[in-house]
Amino acid sequence: MDTKVLSTGVRYTSLPQSYIRPESERPRLSEISDCEDVPIIDLGIADRSKIVKQIGDACKSFGFFQVINHGVSPEAVKKMLDVAIEFFSLPVEEKLKLYSDDPSKTVRLSTSFNVKKEKVHNWRDYLRLHCYPLDKYVPEWPSNPPTFKEIVSNYCMEVRELGYRLQELIAESLGVEKDSIKNILGEQGQHMAVNYYPPCPEPELTYGLPGHTDPNALTILLQDLHVAGLQVLIDGKWLAVNPHPNAFVINLGDQLQALSNGIYRSVWHRATVNSEKPRLSVASFLCPCDDALISAPTALTEDGSAAVYRGFTYAEYYKKFWSRDLEKEHCLELFKN
Ligand code: OGA
Ligand code: NI
Image (tube, rainbow, N blue to C red; front, side, top):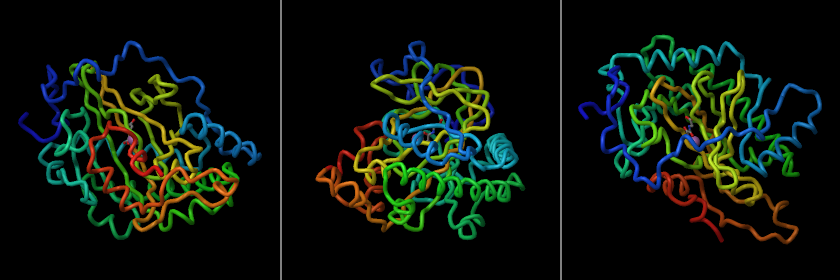
């Protein structure tokens, strides 16, 4: 391949060898059915206890759900998607100025997942940004498109508010004090991955992102309304989560699985690709602060249930996560008591 990224504007006619999965690991796209049971939770209703109950049920059985009337304005969402498309439509030389395969960089354009560590590549380019505190990171962000910084900062602020609200609701649903999750997570970091999955010549042979759980606390995913690709693993079966108008997909990350003492699940999910249309998604990750000590609140263990995981700092966890290949065993398994 002659460039480092896929989004060059030139369509591939065949899948390069380095993207081809062995037969047993392929997505088997024709066997995937739609995920129909996952709740679309309306955060705009007055009955808070109903919302808490729906969230608790969803976190327990699936580890993810969708939300509507979530308070992030439709304009902020539309502008975010438009500027993301505009970014990936820039000439490749312009984008490559931001290229890096070093996961510790706070702004970078990259491709696949962890190019230096993985054996097989994934059909994705992504722009990864640190987003909190904004005044620290925005100066490093792309200045092309010229509206990028303003639009994305605004989107980040609105999404952060939603994230806090969800963490309170999740805490309540666990029966612990509403601020307890936020308190444990400390001053939370916020990262964004703007994912761009170009049309793929042989989508049956590869992934946009292979199955993984997110290493952070909570992920707020905005999916392209017109192109499906997200799938979640439920009861051993991969199911498609089709985009829903004005909704975000919320998934619990590994840290909330740990904090809930394993009662809630960090869901396995993946992104598949298609041969027709590019797909875009914007994942916002809320992350514990580096020295946050992650362990379940005592209220969840005092009834005699043992702590499932040993305490660890987020810094320790994150280092372990990026040192592995993505689709291995759940990274939390390495922290079990
Ligand atoms: C991610 C992710 C899914 C998608 O960025 O962690 O899971 O649909 N993205 O792009
Ligand atoms: Ni993910």
